[in-house]
Length: 410
Image 1 (cartoon, rainbow, N blue to C red):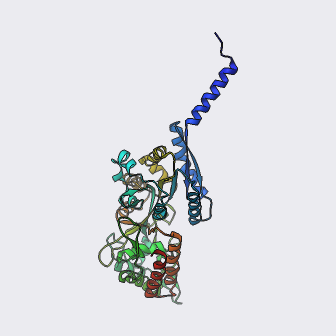
Image 2: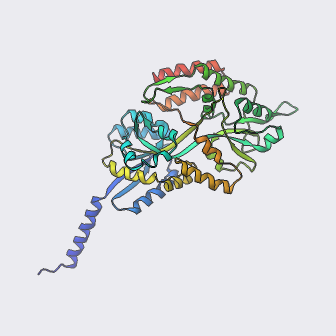
């Protein structure tokens, strides 16, 4: 009988290891985000890799100094027939890439494996990844707009915040908390944050106006509405508050009473006596906030969709959403996760983070369109900044932006 020599045994062992390694599916996981966020992803992906041996996930990001540059690099990859298996990116670009056939429909996977959990995700955020009846991904981290208010400045002005305040109440608070000294110099402002155009979205929507609206459910046809009467009414409110000098100062420095901004800012230090506030009720009694999200999509070109979905299903677990939201300085995409975050926050701080959970229920997605996101946002930013700086009036804003959007969308 022939004996197995040490050399022969070693060769067999090496061949076996090679065979096992060859059988392992290797997935490409790409992030539309700066390199600094990769450690957040690595913590979960490393845990997934360690939990099993059939799949190995490699992480990378698209280099660039802006999200738009990163999306352009993604588009180049897709045009050349390459690209990742799993992509993590901002939902506002989804309609454009989905219309180009970049993403795989994961509805059947959700029905098979997440049917008992999908209702735990905030519906608005799920809809941001949906076109018609097809779902292309799910969110991981959410950000919503809230009103930050400085209680000390409100007390000094003799005004108060109410969860059910109206736009008139909100404007009155802004006026009463704006201070002008004896020399006619403004030393304190009522409003802050409106130099960033997304902060205006709740005020546009509460008037039932919009920059453009999608024809549902397919979200491939879009109607510009910048010069609709409701939109002009919202622009007129902004023009009025600008002309009255209500905008300016700094919330963190204590020279602005109200700030409209992302919920993630609440994790920074504003001092002690501040809190989260609801969006005011509009003229017709409605209100809406803006929600943005980043999440995972499955790429159509992936040759390993089942394995890629296995990774995504792992990431969508409540405990992993919770951890990823913590690392990313955002809110989780699942109600139970945000509720847990709220409970823990309320034990540690005096601020009522539970307000954010309530705001998420009436939030709408960030405007997105199946054409160039960059061009559309540039048009909005251009005309909005001119209105905010007092260079144009509301009607000029609406008509000028409408002209540009019609050229881009239709």
